[in-house]
Image (cartoon, rainbow, N blue to C red; front, side, top):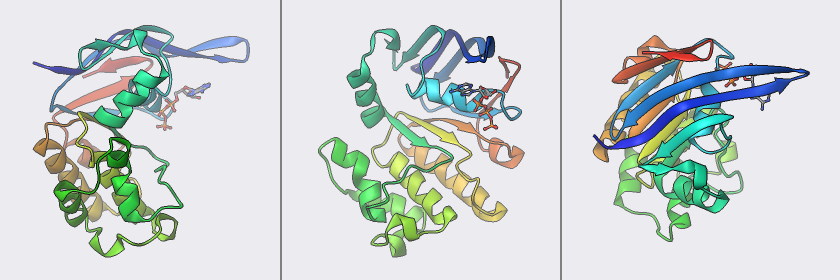
Length: 221
Ligand SMILES: Nc1ncnc2c1ncn2[C@@H]1O[C@H](COP(=O)(O)OP(=O)(O)OP(=O)(O)O)[C@@H](O)[C@H]1O
């Protein structure tokens, strides 16, 4: 079994005034290639913090994070950027789309970072996510749901090994949300992309193979 992400004794805390607030408490977790996991838990339980650590946006207070069999404790900023550009797709609550660019250029952006351009897989994503009529539109002129679908296409454009998603269908109505969930799973499965997805919806969580429930710093499966 190839591991995409292995967390060993990962802890993370924040200084809250003169108190130290432990958010993640010695987590041991493993996500295998192609595996899909729903991350649930109460507000403030540390779901975004866990995603941010795996993406390298935050560092753990202690413990070891191994990504694609490499110990990240030795990684510098440029190694982290390399991982994010080549192996990682993210859809976060704030979509972080590039507002001066149109839909097409946003989706192609991860490919440009690798020196590649638009390809048949991008066309497949665009058609699957219903984005064809919007390709030349500027992303700031799109609705929240449309922006969310662009963010999903962009996150999958470079066929990442790992997709981290924080409420990726949070701006969509129930029916569209379930359709987009099914699409994300199908599109990810085409390239064995693993998914770790934060969701508050049990219907969305049901699309994932496993469920990690985070509460009081610990994960229960
Ligand atoms: N940079 C930070 N500095 C201080 N405290 C932080 C920081 N980031 C997160 N926290 C605290 O860590 C805890 C977990 O936050 P996090 O955003 O990870 O929770 P969450 O489960 O994603 O919440 P929600 O479901 O509401 O988005 C919260 O108490 C939050 O205030």
